[in-house]
Length: 195
Image (tube, rainbow, N blue to C red; front, top):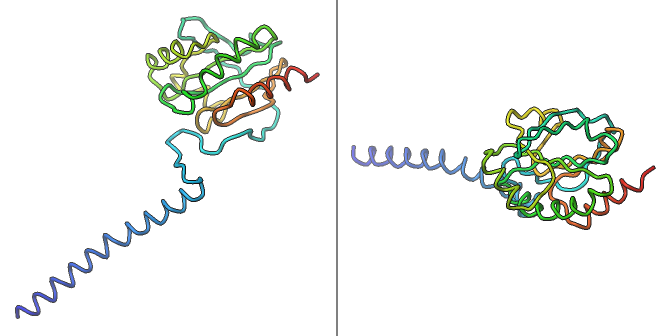
């Protein structure tokens, strides 16, 4: 009887090991496929993993009012007549941190040419986002989309994400992920040169 009990115990152990091993093997197989498709760079939650310019249908940008970290209210429709870049970001987002000095520098160089930037913090803590703006040296208006309405209206898929709006208020370009100084300069110069 002891041999039968030992065989049953061994069989039960094998079944339990199989029940644990099969899902683990499947998980690691899926993880391996995902990493191979992303070039070995895993995407973070809410951080865009597909980068570059996105195809859009030119449409009028949804108006919004944003209370800045300075307590001012910026309304997108009040910026008509200027080229506007709306940047969605968060203080905890590594690509946003990397991009912050590029945006701050570009705004300082282009604001006298009829270009406005508006920073919209999403999925963030207001105090952390305000500190991030201060530390980045950004002088353009920025505030928090605390209820997520602006992000939803723009179809935000992750961060960072930028929407370029022409003087008539139409979205004409969308860029997903962080931009280099060269890429941002190229986009802004094209927009300024457009009739």
